[in-house]
Length: 70
Image (cartoon, rainbow, N blue to C red; front, side):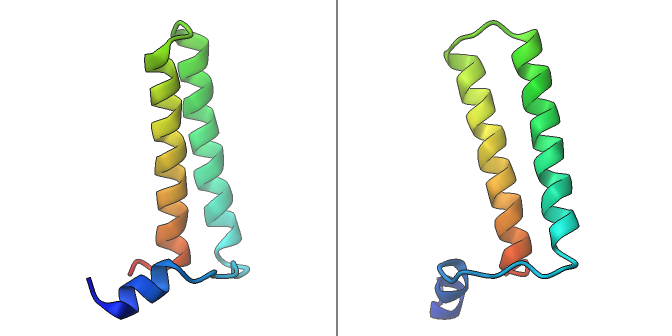
């Protein structure tokens, strides 16, 4: 991994006006899926894991936006 990639990953990127609706769309989709899962599965370690993975997916997608796909 090169230094520029690491610097990009570990630098705060203020959202731009055009990025804000993208972040919102991703968060809303994550919430919708998490809601479907919690409404249709029993409370369990698997349910918790599935919600955690959605959260990770949302965070990683947001990082892709913030880091410009790099």
